Amino acid sequence: MKHSPFVLLIAILCCVESVLAQKKVDPEQQMIRSIYDETLTQGEAYENLRYLCKNIGGRVAGSPQNAAAVEWARQLMESYGFDKVFLQEVMVPHWVRGQKEIARVVNSKKLGTQELNITALGNAVGTGPEGVLAEVVEVQNFEQLAELGREQLEGKIVFYNRPMDQTQIQTGTAYGMAGNQRRSGPSEAAKYGAVGAIVRSLSTDFDDYPHTGSTVYTFNLPKIPAVAISTNDADLLSHLLKDDTELKLYFETHCQILDDVMSYNVVGEITGSEYPEEYIVVGGHLDSWDLAEGAHDDGAGVVHSIEVLRTLQAIGYQPKRSVRAVLFANEENGLAGGKKYAELAEENKEKHYAAIESDAGGFTPRGFSMDVSDEAYERIQSWKPLLMPYDLHKFDKGGSGADISALKPQGVELIGLRPDSQRYFDMHHSAQDVFEIVDRRELLLGAAAMSSLVYLIDSQGLYPKQRGK
Ligand SMILES: [Zn+2]
Image (cartoon, rainbow, N blue to C red; front, side, top):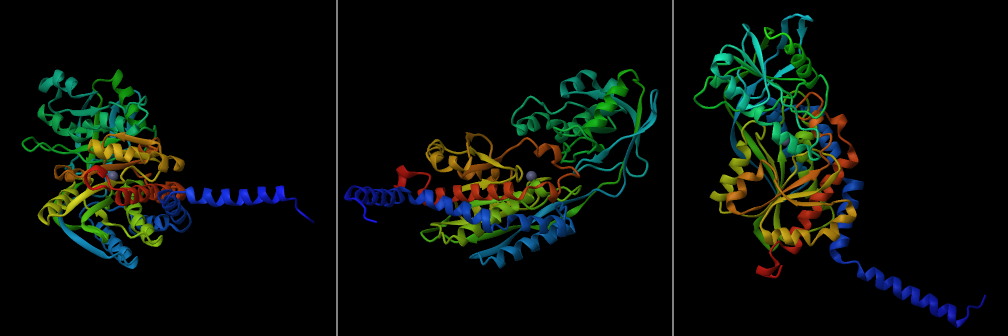
């Protein structure tokens, strides 16, 4: 068959156009595509998380499981052949829960004896075998507590029952708004002579799981035993208290604070080719609470951070700056690892260029929140067209991550990965935070989002005006 010259011309033009179109794809676009392709097809974060959750499990600072997690992370990063893998010594508190945790209403006019789902707050002292038996006073906040005063609170159990605000779209905001009840509530109650504190679980769900989390005792006040109660039982207790002001509750916990223990931040590094003395950190915390496996909090952040280095290496990207995965010790009850990392960075005169933390779960990433300078903010905004095709839409100013926050005084640009937050607080710090609730694909997308941002920060630079890069 013969083609007319016109048809041939069209065919040639189409060919030229497609070659030109291929040339138009800029290298940044291509590199981000490779990052996503590599992570989504070869990513190992999910299998790594399975190992951490199923073979090691919950890993409270100072526990043998935490020590096992340190060794696992060190060996894993060495097996990937990163340029450097090392540990940083950190002294951490060692709180143990103890076996038995019980709570019951003992004299309800409606129900008689009623068992309640509670768990001790992290860092709390226990009641010991004698338990605490007292009348219960329900409050919503510290103002109400002050109004009631010692006269009505002495010898009582204070029950904080302010729920997380369901109308907040960002559940982290609601968590922040309700958080002081757990953190400072027990000590605030102790000011007025209370003998125990019960805190409504910081959860967006209504179920029977109590959610633990740290409480911080004020230095010069008596330490009173403190527990979290499930949201369903908080509602039940509140209901029972309505017309039963003499209601008494018994609770018993056996937690203890033991001597501090040596733990470690685990660090893996790909050393930079042009500015090896400048660091970009990706991090999460290796410790977790003990009620479950710390899958979302913060197993996800741990495997995300390792996956970033694995991916950059796998696609053959040689960073200009040194990129470090830092698995911080003891975020949950004291931030010792984050503080130590910042202290050593200062001591060793390491210039940290940027730090990105993943500590909001392994859910579908939505973008990033940034605690950064105006110049860096503008720069990151300019990368939106490169990241929005991957469904990353949030590029807001805001918080970053607890572990990296200690780097702030050194002028480090701080960024937090922001996954979808709707389900995180349903299971956060409760027995539900297990491997099975993490979705493989969502987890991998989080790692790819972090890798892409690390790549852009490294290759494009955050301060083009200063260095032309
Ligand atoms: Zn966390």
